[in-house]
Image 1: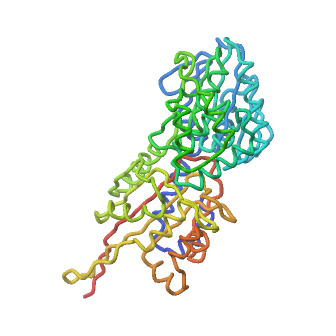
Image 2 (image 1 turned 90 degrees about the vertical axis):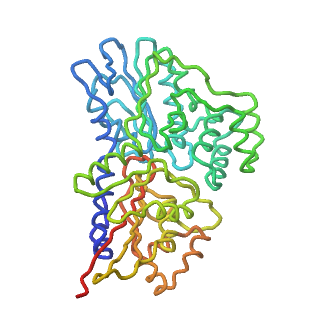
Image 3 (image 1 turned 90 degrees about the horizontal axis):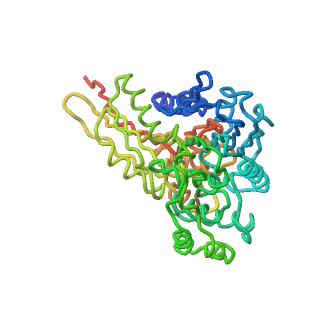
Length: 449
């Protein structure tokens, strides 16, 4: 998965462990693997976790969805169900093929909605409305689905929606706050899709990219009962000083569905950040490493996070795994993303080396890797997955005259880290469960006698 593995090993001889962790995480999180682990078909019986569905009872089976991982999810579902599928339509960031069997594949804009995404969403809504009481709809949702399911409520235009999204992303609004607004300005999010699918049966498979795997927040919860209100959405806009008369008009008269038939709608989280951390913990413990995981730890401003990470990572010869998603307050005009800004900030925060003990020189060595599981961290000339940071980079910054604070102020972490040759390139991974940060605190003893 890591395209520049050889170069990173050359630049950072001790980085093999980090690179192995990254590869293991991305392989485990592949949507095909997550579907295979969660969905089984025996005869006409479809099993998802402990639940079983007899496909013989359905006249038609439809497959719809949107998100970064949805293409690969649909590919595996198509392999599983084949000709049982009547029709389908998915919105994805990259249309590798035009069709997956009877499932049409449409390229939609991300991180900002576009006209192509809007047209695709209208096709998805057409399928939702045609599904009858003897039909089954399988909905495949993953991170990025909010941008790829645009259906603004009139008089709000797509242009208005994009502008509001840009303002929210530039602020320090959390994904919960951003999606609260998105849900209440949409005809499809916040449970609206489930409402339109009724009276058909609905199975929704989610790959989570949000804290606590809150289903109503993942891709703005198109098939999930919405916990928030239009008033909550309005308060978010007020909090971040975002003014839009059309949005305020929509929020004044529209509310998301507040009841869904639990017997007809079944939602499942088949992959998440926490699931990934637990898998990596088992993977490393088999290799005899001591490991501690901190799910949902990464939050708040990215550049403030390293100090908290190193404060938690005090025990020697131990690997610490952190999950979640930070935010970047955009005030500059540079390139970068959450993981890159966190990594660049970590160079200044990495703990100092300890002194001498007895006849040994003991070095307490901290190193850090920050990884976007979708392989695309923020905005850069080429897709960047993350970076590896060691103490040596502080010295290298001085040698190359790299002013870390100056780059952080311009939100240009990409340029600084590129000059340090510590970026990780994977290309788009086809999945997304948020970010993973690994901190390794090892004590290396070297004989001096």
